[in-house]
Length: 255
Image: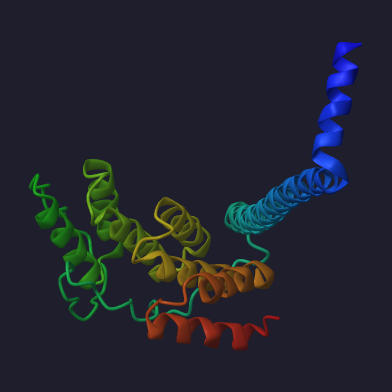
C-alpha cells in the first residue's frame, strides 16, 4: 500500500509534462537501437553477398580449369592412340628424299654440318661428360649417320636422364627415325618427348614433327589435332615452327 502511494506521489510530483518527456526519451532510445541493429544487419548482408560472389568466381575458375585439363587429357589420349595404331597405308619415302631441315640448334647445341650418306661405323665411346656425349651424338646426326645417331642419343638419355639436354636428345631421336622414313616410330618418339617435357623448349617442335609423322601415315585427323594444339597452346613458339604448322594445316585442309 505504501509503495502504491509512493508511486502516485512520484507521478504527481513529475506532473504530466515530466511523464511525457520520460516516454519520449525511452522512444528515442528504442529508435537508436533499431537503427544500429538495421545498420549491423545491412553490413552483414553486404558481407554475405560479397562472399557469395567470391565463391561463384572461384567455382567458375575451377570449372574452367577442369575443362582445360579434360581437353588436354583427351588430346594426349588421341595422340597416343594415333602413334600406337598401325598406319593406314605404309608410305615409303622417296629414294632421294631426306628429312625436312631440322630446327635450328639451341645455344647449347653444336651447329649441324651438311648431311652425308649414312655409313657403318663404330660409335664414339661415352665420355662420362654429358656435354661431350651430346655433342658426339649430334655430330653423327649432322653427318647424316642416323642409325648411329639414334643409338648415341638413346644412350645419352639413359646415362643422363636428368640433364638439361635430355629433352633435346629425345627430340633428336625422333628426327633420326623421321629421316629414315620410319614415321610410326618417329611419331611415337616425338609423342614421348612431348609428354616428357610439355613445357620445355622443344615441346612445340615435338608437336610439329608428331603431326608431320602422322600425316605421312595418312592419319589426317590426328595430325590436325597435333598442329592445332601447337598453335593454341604454344603462342610463344618460334615463328618458323608456327609457320610450318600453319602450312601443314593448310596442306591437310584441317578444320
